[in-house]
Image 1 (cartoon, rainbow, N blue to C red):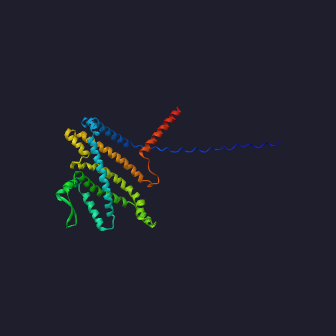
Image 2: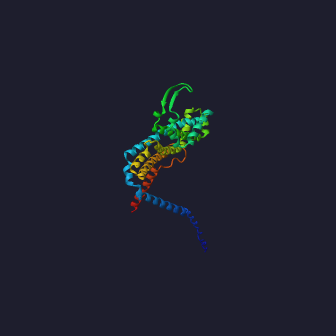
Image 3: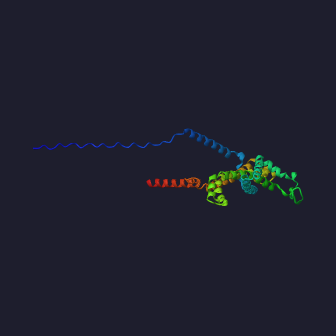
Length: 323
């Protein structure tokens, strides 16, 4: 009788070793930064408490005069001076920047000399000089050089304090605006201008479609800084008895001797207007920054706030559903 063949045991199958767990990334601890942030917050809280709890600021008086008619009239004149002088300054500054970039050496020299003079002298000195221009030129005439004059006007009757402020601030802002515009134009890559010329584009189209959009990215930040500086710089016209915001509060505290609260009123209005201008500058910069990067524009603070609210709402809904 044949013996059955022996049954061999099945070979044992080894299980593959478990895959190693992915290393967990732990952010590096930065105790120094947290300590510095805590100290900064503590100091900021102490400063805020000292301002709020200090009775010398007389916050009740500040609230009473913040929307007074005289203060609002001074604020309106300040905004008018800022808008007018900066608009005229950029208009004249564009002409000066064009002269600086011209191939004509005479135009370049005249533009450089103008910018050099007005950037080298203090604004207050310039205003006082124009205010006393009648001592140098009692009359201004229009006629033939070294010949007869056809029209003559007395400068005493022509230039008053407000007109002096407009002329002085406009001439000053135009010198700075010229350099801002010239820097923005020079920031455009020359290769793009050569490519546009090779395509046969006209000079006006090149200026409107290529030069200006790219130059504005460099012009807008500096122009916004100039706008804020011009707003604060109008306070120097108070020495000419022009009823701007600072002069209006000065008239009040010279009569009531409430110097600190009235200066706080002027400071708060400057802060409010400067904040509004800064927000406008932010969105203008975003407008001209379109297409500058491949990743697109970063979200605005409003978009970030909306995203945070939506995320918090979704998390609350999920917690409610689980419970």
